[in-house]
Length: 533
Image 1 (cartoon, rainbow, N blue to C red):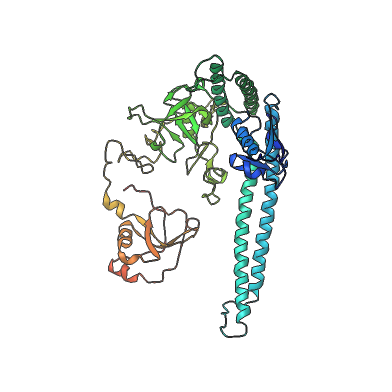
Image 2 (tube, rainbow, N blue to C red):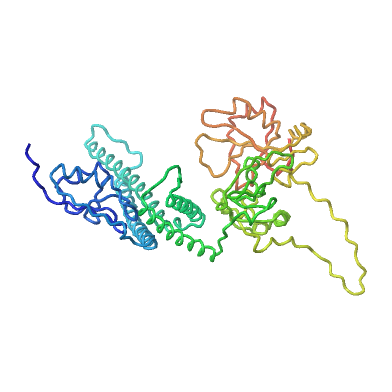
């Protein structure tokens, strides 16, 4: 058997600082094709072959040995040099990650800018060709201009397609740029860092057990040298991340734990104040979200005697308040709309409306509650007007305070109907069905009939008539008031005229339906008093 001729020497090196790299290979010598299926990649920035994600880690000897075996079978001399003790500090590794993220953000931003420029240039090319064609001008088949018209048509189509494709690329690279720019903040986020510290502490306990000859994680390890190196790495990482948390605490971040809560306190998570049902070692038990949606404060129903609930970890806590703090916030009066601010939760659908009440710390529409730690400063009590007695003036007897309006026991809204025992806001009706309200009174209330078109994207609802609720039900239930592209519907709370809805002309196509149903519509809307059906 003829021996395979020696093609040269390949050196595979590994250090914790540089990772696993291969030297002695050049482009076109066939080495890359042999080792690529074994998990090796080409690093163009270094001009070398290597194993991805091998820095700051132990050598992946199975990949190194497999590559060496294949290369030796094809006539290469392979030398392996592994140094597990040459490493860089964890702080240096993190700093390099942040620098590379900044470089990526700058590079992706340039890509996005170039793609946006190409998109705009393609659009202008198409517009320039289209400007030379009269609007509505067809292609004259058989005319001498037919060939040029078809070429122009194809050029316009190609330009618009290029415009759309380049715009998609610009959006893609802009998103990559934003993600890279936010990498450092994402990496050092306090909540995420706390979870990372908890995982490292688990790893440290496992390494300690392995070094003691015990089982951890379901198995044992005997590679003592590597375990000692891993122990030192974990200690260094824990020190680094604990300093990140200490820095966040100096900026005002609060690390929550079981000692900060007791049953009956309130915790803010996800923009809602939840009443604490139980304090656990690693979690808090709060009422389930199914108990109320779109409300700023959620308490457990006193009639519910079950122990069920929803648990949240302490790193998701964003604020603390006592029962007294929540009572003061709920008792505070919301400012006029002109003095409110934009709600950060429903800003996209608010259409410029100022919904957030700074006095209450809550949105008056969506119920978003601003997180805050009231341990530092309790919520202020509602302002009271006090009479100042002047000398020689007899004291004035103050009238007895009016009884406070009963609130809904579920969502704590002031819209609770005590007579009907029903809440029109969350539809809570304890003790079975609510007491019936006179049906005749409700059906004679006013309603606004709207027309809705298929695929419509209008910012305001379109109103046709103002009728009674009884007439609105009859109109919208008639099959003649709906077609393939439109349908009639009605509401008793349309919102503000000119902001949420507007009148549209009545073309008379439904006069026959109005006549058959004996309905006389009006084109004037007066805000009715709310009546619960």
